[in-house]
Length: 164
Image (cartoon, rainbow, N blue to C red):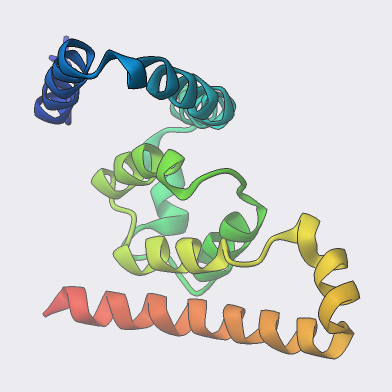
């Protein structure tokens, strides 16, 4: 059985110590901090749950070798398209996706595809109608084409730079 590693344990301990010190020396702000934390947790918990479930489903039904033939070192040009589409379709805060991307990277996901995924997240499908209403169809199309182009170019640049 694999031993679990808790990343960020030092940061968690440091934050806990700061919170305790704040409670001792400035207890008036504890309620506000706890309220903000619970509000943030309420907003982030669904996407974390989704990412954990998605990762579990992928790990259960698909073996890393099956996935990595589409995203690994020997994957073709379609891997860039898949990463871009995944970025466009993904929702929630980017940091919620870090654990899954890290897991896939450890199984061979190219750094350039991670960059392409992250850039692709700049396109928000639910907001496109609002963007068209505010800036017009032409601007929206050109901007999104630039985002797509530079997502691909940035992924290629990262792959080249990481090889050196």
